[in-house]
Length: 502
Image 1 (cartoon, one colour):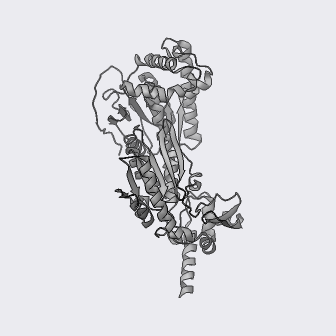
Image 2 (cartoon, rainbow, N blue to C red):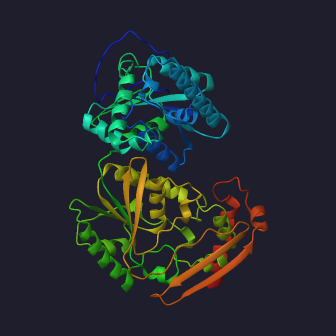
Image 3 (cartoon, one colour):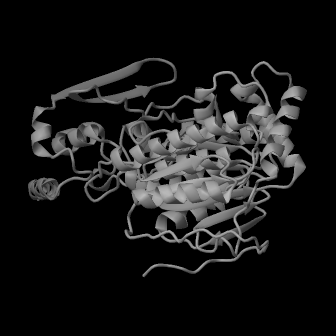
């Protein structure tokens, strides 16, 4: 059943005699084209980049197509706002060519390269332009979802120009005053022809209209789960300056033993880190800091030392290693050599028998990301795999990079969101701990490295190598998760171990 209803958050009716055709949607799971709408300096590129990062993080292949970049590639030297004047026929021709080139790349990405969502980042301020995009989508079998950003607050616009636009290649050789003046004139070039999405005239379109940086929203005709997730995400983000602190729990007893998972308490060094973390947070001078932990003993003990209220999140619990919980890597490699090798082949998608994969963990952590986007200053005391997933979101890391991000014990990462990304500061609190990081295995071999660091004295390294030829025969690499035969093998191994114990 196709959803044709819409949700009204804010009403502003401004009738004009323009009509757009209905968008026929014949398939449920066809690619989606997200189209931004709005005057310059309204945060369209900020929204596009964040949305692209979020969708990729949850596993939806997404790419941004910024028409402004196409224009800069085409016109190497920017002269002035005159290029954007509506009566500048040459400039108009070039801008149309750039938009057309971007749409051609959108088509290729969504039809030939496996993309599911494309973000077409441009002003798209006229109904004529939007109708052209709709026709393009109809011809190629894409759904269209518009995202309009409307802002009338002069302070927000001015800040956006100074923080973002002045760093553009367009203004490399301009002083601040000249650049601001030119950009304001560029905005004027669009204002006279700007036709906002209208509640009546555009009632057949799917869109979200964001007003004054999230003060109000108008959501219309959401058709599928992708559009629902886009709306939900965009209604949670904000631009208020803040910092997010990520750290792991203090060193645990099972960390020292080289075991994964479990629910052990802190070692004396782990407790020392908790005290140092308390001092560090006090030095930051943040009065409204919120503290989140998992429901596992080691994160709770770490947070207790802060002497402030904290919230426990079950979804922040460490990745579930299933039958491998509380085992050393050497034990896993000895008892389940196939599973050990398969995890090295695709660490992100590999799921522990009766446990989780990193891919599962990302889905579990999505509510945390949503809440982090809503909050201001937050300290998250979590675990290695969880911290990797959160860090990958903020740093826009791929699924292949995520499982190998370095998140050492007794180190705080301070994340400060900036215009089109995130500034990262790594602060070591100078308390010794074991090194639990496992490097990416070399191509063609499965390698295990276990490292202990004891109070700056020495390092023990053990390396085991196995050929990979048999691994490829045992599991078809096209599968994302372990095959049934693999689980049966694990069960047989477990039964065998159980019988031996009896």
